Image (cartoon, rainbow, N blue to C red; front, side):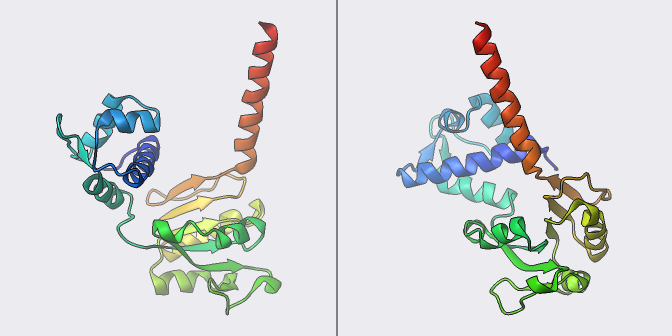
Length: 211
């Protein structure tokens, strides 16, 4: 069964909450605990879990370690996910240097760029020529990619990834990318997200001033 994006986000939030409960010494939690931690109703928690046959006990709740393992499996965190990155500019470098990926089972194994000044095969995460992308993906059977290139070349990179066998893409380019029915594309438009925040802050301020 394929769940929608909101469900997956909540599932990730439940996992983070379980990790916090674990640090606090909790052995078991109830749907009410998770609901308060995530900001949803307890019925929503139970509905989300029932979607994949996760059940608790009315009196005993959910065992923290067992529930965490089940969610890890659903999110693919029970194994290391290898990822390729195209674009070694400012966003790309930030992603390469981000230390929180590996503890969560996400590993950027290689980056690719068209700029020869960025190419460095000797770094822990090598930066390789863009021309090597398709062969690298096929050879290493990579299924996940990140695009952090200018919008005028983003679709070309996307096409190459799909041709090579990529199944899921996180796109930082500020443009809508065309994939196919077998490709998952998640857009991370930082400018748009910030504009949304600015809009609602301004709108809230105007509402308060009218009162």
